[in-house]
Image (spheres, rainbow, N blue to C red):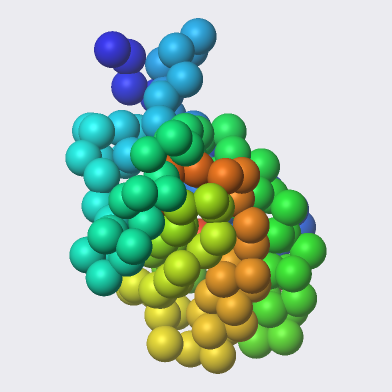
Length: 145
């Protein structure tokens, strides 16, 4: 399998590294397979609650993640314009059965800052297509102005 370079989605000063777009051409991969080689990481507190509901739901695909995160760009821009902190931060996003975001945690870079908290709230309000529960990292790079 050929390894592809992560895609960068740019909108003004915001650059989103879409690592979930690293699947082989013509062969879409699930988010979990792309990020962790097929291992699913679901917080145990939610696992039993979602297990029965998630049985018939499809896995979250990388195209769904990319489309959902692109739709959030205007709100993320509002956060970055308000706080203007540069750097790269990875947001660990937990999606519950059905596509609702259960938890968002920022790590590295500007994590813990008001900007990271603002962006985490934007991501928390996102709705992914109905899917089996999953957790994935999403790196976000903000260019210094």
